[in-house]
Image (cartoon, rainbow, N blue to C red):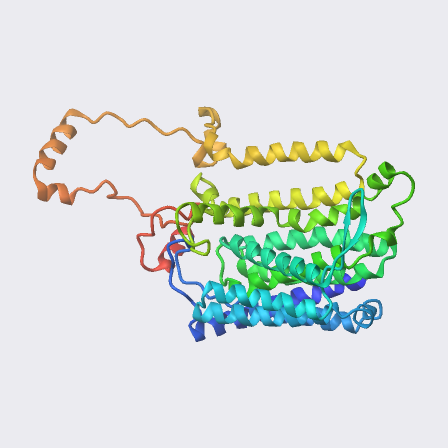
Length: 452
């Protein structure tokens, strides 16, 4: 565990330290696209954050190769080199897309080629554990197609969810943490050396995301871009493929006794079939809904829009930060809930806790629809949004007559403004949603001074 933590810290430190210079490089090279209709940020923000994340991946794997307890992963398996080859290819495609906006079909082809490169070097699904049947070996073509499909779906699911500051990096970090716990249990608890590469990939992926998050939290100073989102999606898929299709279920010696007992005891083996999809359940659901929504409207499935889950959270009234935290909550609940159930499948307390937490998540999700109003005596202790609005005072007769007379003259009416005497507050600060109107200030530094 000490070596894995060291690898995580090295990947996080390298990613964190390189993100600042990469930001300056992105600004110098003009990798700051204009604001698009689907974007929620208000100012051009540099991309290419995936450059720092890629070097964090390389640093983590390099350090692991020189650690005595992890060096065997590189000696007994070719999976780390396969991951690095596929990651380099997908990262290069992402960098070109961040700079030149390449076509979506070209990116899809590059994703399939990167998955094929990993398959050619041994990172592929060899067999599947099926309940009631046992281990089913796959042919070369079956394993290749299944591996490529899983890689492409995971990459695009992570890419689709990358719409808010810190959302994709945080969700993938949560997913990799759950995967790390599961893979480490398979390796250390059952003594299965084939689970060691997946454990290493998950720890490095956590470090990459943790190192990038301080620069990417709202308001983000840099975006990871496709070079980062596709990269972390590929590493997450590689972890899933390694622990799902490379670990022989028969090595766990759970298929003993009657059929019912063997099936129940083998739940930790069957869970990996669903674990990759449950860990990215929210991004995959967003991906499927986007495809159905766009094709229903007669558009291309690759046409961008503002109908993603994080956009809907903003529309119903959540602030940017709260929308991200809600997505974090659901990702952690699904990922860690499945991992806990795979460990203690006979305990009903886990199911009960998941149901209770799901109810809490629904309440938090729908909270803007039912905004409570505090009583008069408690208004000074709650945020302004929970206070009752004061009733407008009736104007005095003299004031009303003067107002009526002034409004009769168009010139005087133009001189009177309802915002006169008020300080305009720019959109996007103090927890305001990003869907609101644009700021009235052209210079953001003036808006920052207002917050102070």
